Amino acid sequence: MSSGRKYSFSDALFSSTFIHNPVLIQAAGLCAIVAVATLKTAVLLAAAFFPVLIITQVFACLALKRVPRWIRVAIYLLIGTAIIAGIIYAIDTFMPEISLGAGIYLALTAANSIIALHCEKLAVKTDLRHAFFDSVATALGYAAVIIPVGALREMIGSSTIWGANIKVPMTYPAILMPFGGFLVLAFFAAALKAL
Image 1 (cartoon, rainbow, N blue to C red):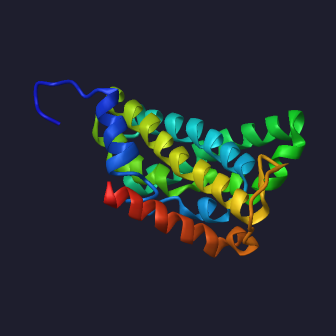
Image 2 (cartoon, rainbow, N blue to C red):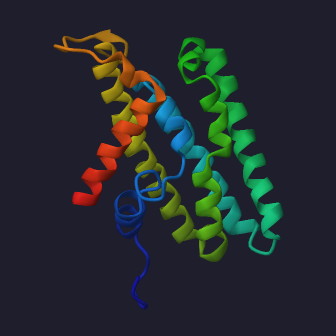
């Protein structure tokens, strides 16, 4: 970023979503992505990740700059846990069938390594505008990986999309296993590197 020019959302989008994608380049937040094997679950986890990352990163920027690092990391986890607890309660109350596919990975969103990584590398060292733009762009980068990976694995592994049957000539149920998630991620990372 050149001096004299304000940091814009397009700068954050290009950097945090594509060039430094949190999953494909930084290899952070892999746990949920390799476990998610349906589009519905992937969309749920991506949607839950947005408020956790944005609120935590904004709070870190505003209130945690002078707090020691070992305390900040615990605070990130507490903030994430509080947000995820509210999301889980809302889902269990209004849409209980949705949370079944996410299992433990919805709760683990509170401890996603991307949150601590971005809060420590950026939020506590910059201004609110930069931190907010980065958090939105990073969440978009996470969603840009988890959603297509979940959709592709569901189509190839069970010949469905969003639970509806589609006609796929051959299915490979093994792709629904965690190693299938690593395999699909490897192809996505190679494609990004080629671009």
